Length: 249
Image (cartoon, rainbow, N blue to C red):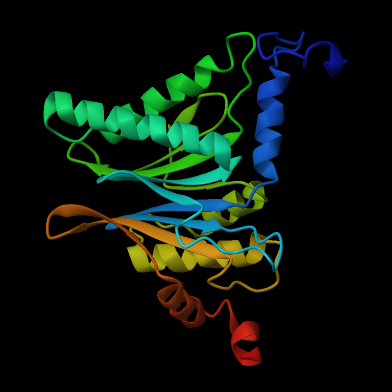
């Protein structure tokens, strides 16, 4: 039945569904997972890097985490080439706002403007939806620390803890059980690693397979920091999710 209605993004099926948008969400379900957790003193983003081959030269820069502005960062799940277009769009919008108003763009306003672009690609003929979901982490003077999730349909929503990518349903239910409102940043990191260790396909977590980034306040200024592989290895050992790999070495 769906075959008659999935050739274009602009056609609704009789059940009121847009199949191309749903297929884009399926593509994200096969991508490396990403988890965001809102804590009382910051926002934690953890992403899974898919290592497809031992011969692949690992990138010196981050693959899953991107800084959009001094006060906003995002984690990505889905098609990276699509994500690059949207990240560049978001960076330009943030800088335009700063130039016009001499202050950082509010986080939700930035997320909404990017989702407006995504929505346009589900409504006009000849275009396909962006096959990417984002977790936005940021801080502004209006609402403090914030975490938003957006999907290919252009919808976005604010979350205390969210997961996108592979096995996101299982990760989401674990987060629902273990998340506490007064969680600290360190506890949020441990929770994210615990969830990933149970939902990732690989048997053990290592710093080569993960990326960790945080948005926090330091001396009254918003700071975005990416955890180095060495520091991430220490955190993994401390949290106890890489014991098999540690014993082998």
